[in-house]
Amino acid sequence: MCLERDLRTYLQFYKRPELKQTSYDTILRTAENMIIPFLGSSETSKITSFDVIEVMNKLRYEKNYSYYSLKRTRDLLNSFYEFAVSEKLAERNVIETVHCKNTEASSKKIPLFFTLNEIKRFSAAALEQKTNGEYARFYGPLMLVYLHTGCRLGELLALKREEDFDKKSRKIVIHSDIEQISRIGADGERKGGCKIIHQESPKTKSSNRTLYLNDTSLNILNYYYSESKIRNCEYLIPPFKKGNLSASPSSVQSTFTAICNKAGISKHKGIHTLRHTFATHLFKNGVDIKTVSALMGHASVRITYDIYCHIIEEELPDVVGILDEVFS
Image (tube, rainbow, N blue to C red):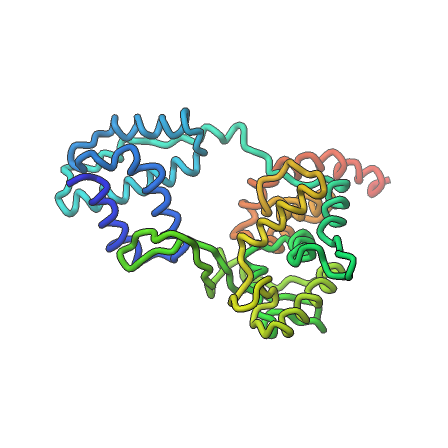
């Protein structure tokens, strides 16, 4: 049997039932983009460790995939071969001797964020209005809520109008998530196109949180609240086109790109830059790491530190300088 057939069978009947739709979509993409094109036509039982290492090297040095993509590929192959051995499709797990070393650790990529000047330009473009007083881009103001709360995009779009937004108490409650994934049929195969799913649990347990709103976020969410009522939508952020259950993540992403172009900002890697900007400027203004981690909904403070350690370390000289005033 060829690896592609065996791997697809494994994914459909053994992995799909135990995974969230988003997780299954991710490993299916991994299989289709990083494994099947290189090893799919080979017999499962005849693939060697050297064959896998050759593919991993190709992915790393020719395709320039990140360590995390390589690790995901290695982990999927490892779990598949454990299954293959148990089902006698292969004599041994050839992935056991294949290691995936993180060579990026010493040169970890620093998350991109907007400077104060860029934030000013971005905000002006996000709130741009037409001559009739309407916003030039329906999701433009939403960008500032993202910037002022540090929420993940799916968390914002999953907010229910009456359940999760408390105008009087100036807060939103995060407890669910919206994702846009591939359409997958009953056979576990991709069918083309995308669909939007509402997940009742967010990314991690720590992602369940209550966030209090500043004036900017409160005013903008009041605007979307009114729009949502007019459109008879259960979500706080309604879709631009009537008839959809929720706003489309891809539409919001497109709005972000358009606003960056309008503001003359080119150094970004998608809308998640706003989340990094939120955290970075909190650190630069002296907010402690535990508070930032809680606001971001990270699973642990360690995750927050690993991402933003460069910012924290930059502020250390100023922190020590405070002692001159405290101890004098």
